[in-house]
Length: 332
Image (tube, rainbow, N blue to C red):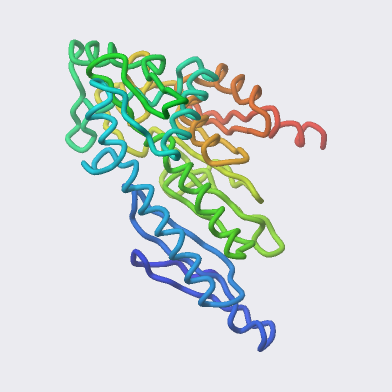
């Protein structure tokens, strides 16, 4: 039985003493609140100290990415970009340059459904206070949204905004990057069985020592219930849902997933889960598909090799990509 943690940073081992020589090995779980979300790592270590050091390295990496990419920390590289890029080309770190380059590639792939410049409109919502912008303010903000206005110069590795009022947010991207980095750290430290989660983004390393990892997709309207449980091995999974940060305004749910074209929350889906080889892909596609809706979203997933999707639409109906449906069809 795996023991759950009860406090951030707390460690629990559950030993399976098959022999005295294996007594030092076991499952380790560590959790902390970083990047505005719950960070969790669960891993098997043959040696307790090796496992503790690996889990600590994961949390150190999460803190590093938060310091670099948080829009709320004035000293972060992201905050500096948002302050200065409308006036001049801002030099980027190699890591930030690669991330923005990938973000622009996903914007092109999704016809702008994924767009880190949505932040000009997204910043106008206050989900805690249940406040949304009026029509005039939203229209003005949407004039500052558009990924083609992000002038990335690969030669000088710099970024400039095409107009005043633009800003970017990596909230739909940074956690996927973080879980990718974390699993790479675990591999380098000799960990072969693990799962790293950052909110709705997870990446599994290997299997769970002889059986797949089981990752549940929650029911968007029934807390504590699931619509599916997926057996996974060596894959990334990202879920975006309209239940994470939201408030209801009449018949419309205002949630944190924003359509860059309108500055408003799409209403056609309740949740999108993407399976992919890496966290950047799964997280970016989960946001893009949510904006595109069922038909266009699944068409996008079918165009990207190695990806699959599970969607819950506005009526609670489950949809799956062709890759997930083929095994069931073949078994008939």
